[in-house]
Image (cartoon, rainbow over all chains, first blue to last red):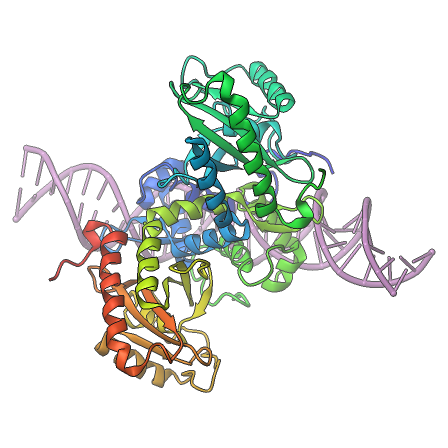
Length: 259
Length: 259
DNA sequence: AGCCGCTTCCCATCATGTGGGAACGAGCGT
DNA sequence: ACGCTCGTTCCCACATGATGGGAAGCGGCT
């Protein structure tokens, strides 16, 4: 009842929370981390980090290099990841994305929101940047995920400070709110050099029945390819693909059925 | 007081262990589980299961259906899974497996060991049975993973009771030990109708420098296709593929370099 | 209505995880 | 070879944080 937005671990978990934080550590840092690396990253006592790592190790969520005694993500993570990947039907998305990429000559990426990041989970190129984390405020993918955010998703205030990547990056919360309003009314997000120069991205949502974005679909290319005049053409292709993905990725009960 | 379902957990973790068990619950049972479903499956008090689920939810390892309040695997699992999948280089395996499948006319699967199961993580067919769990004692994949098991891997005694799937399934631990000895000496495993009738599977290991099986590679077809006379031919193809996978999947430092 | 099963929160209890410390081994620069 | 430092790993008394019974509040059945 009370708070619709749960801030942080107010109730009932500390060991678990920390253990999951341990797993998240393997994202940015190299593939192998020592126990004391983990302790440092999470500002935990070595003893505690070590114990958590051992538990995760026993459960198969981590595995240990035999020589260096360092840890890496274990088979259970791979296993569960494959499972959820298929449960979400993401393996069905790749062909659609490849098709979109081929038709438009741009790269096509599909992302979902995970905490404060947009995470690319499928791509149309030969070597898609799958697994890549992108900020929410400075990418078209992120703007879409924010604009049609799920109620649970922290509503903009609880975002980390907006970092500037180029001189175009939106760093003012108020400006971001206005931009999200524009995204909603125009039904697409544009990123024109806000995360890197010379890259223009269009993104549209894959919506569920409740009108929330389950995924964001992006088309990315140089400004020379995605000119202002061609924007509508690209959007048209992207939206068609997004509608197809709604059918492929969402269970029947969660699809919107208008039109 | 010794946990009812946890044979291990000797040192320093109970909440964490249970939380991870919660995640594993989503394997066999349908994609959506309610909090009390979890409690039942793990024989935990509802209150506790609920708290664990909430924590996992907050960390993004679970997500909750808005209408039914049931849980499913969350974005963080997908994200970390993709990450470990790529860190292991498994996306490089699919083309090799497809090639092997095409050359032999059989299905080709790659599995790794996760706890008491062999888990298929990549396949050569159009719709590979990725994510499928197979028992260790009644499949060619499992026998390979056991025969060249890692030291950490429980050595046969700590396996759950050997269940019979057909009249050919090996259920005696002693018989299994003898079979594993044979597998090691012949350098391949055969499953001839031990998990299902009318299916014959050959499996070979993908070995690391220490001589342990990191993965198992299986070629599966009907006994009419894989006849006794052709076994060597199939094995030859499979072993060539396994060697290629050693190069693709293992970091240079962990590859064996003999020959 | 009446019943049942579910989710969710509260709270006293004490089992559990916590973290300081110590033992041990490996690598390294002098 | 040496002593140094930084790594992992185990032990153990303490109090903190997880535990689970219970009750309140929904919603769907028959």
